Image (cartoon, rainbow, N blue to C red):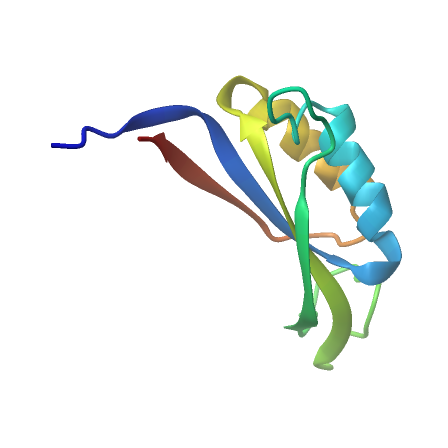
Length: 111
């Protein structure tokens, strides 16, 4: 029988315009994400198209109020120690060009 236990890490995933991907990757690593054994700055990226429509009251960096925008983006995923999540998310928000960046945090299990 396999008993799973919560890992000391989570996975942080953030979508960012490709123009700012390196900036966000560096923010992740500088704040403590991306550590795997004797390696730092560990991440994986996949490219795609992000879509959104800024609504009244938004202050979009990209796009116009009421118009659907499509942006070439990278989804960057990186392991992050649970005890550094708050600092890493704050660093990503500072480095990210969007007013409301999409940041997902996934729990991980050790087997």
